[in-house]
Image (cartoon, rainbow, N blue to C red; front, side):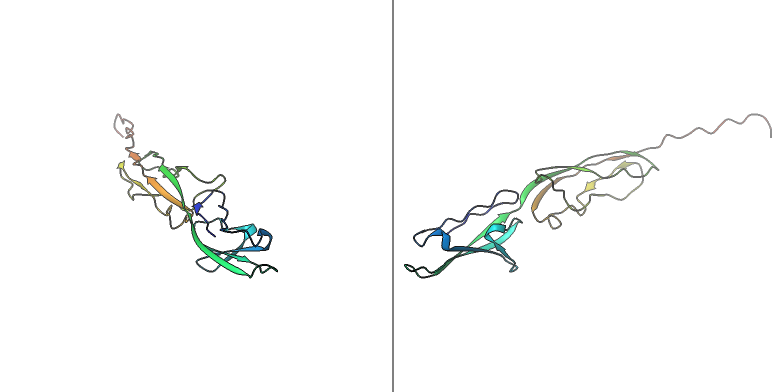
Length: 166
């Protein structure tokens, strides 16, 4: 028996049995993660990680029971995250730090938030990955592209002219 791993978000690969002489109706499948969590054949694992599949052929009148096992990996899916550069004027509140993510499984979102290099002075400041990391998103391998938004100088307001003596 063998099984080939796949990438998160793809359909699970079926195990390949080396022999079916004992019949496939008498076969049970048990998927197990490295942390010991079990999965049934109807509910194969979906999250990225390392797993073992144990196949048991039940005894019949013609054959003895036997068991075979194979290990496989569900690889994290590659996703590209690009920070969006937004500007603000000195003294204004920071705009929300947003990004575009390409490659996510439909209906999913990443966990975590971008961060901005600290400063309130006019100039450019890097947007960093912050907590939007592989550790917080174990089903994905994130390729991150930052941005350098600017804090623009505020236009000075002219004081009203005062004429005459007060």
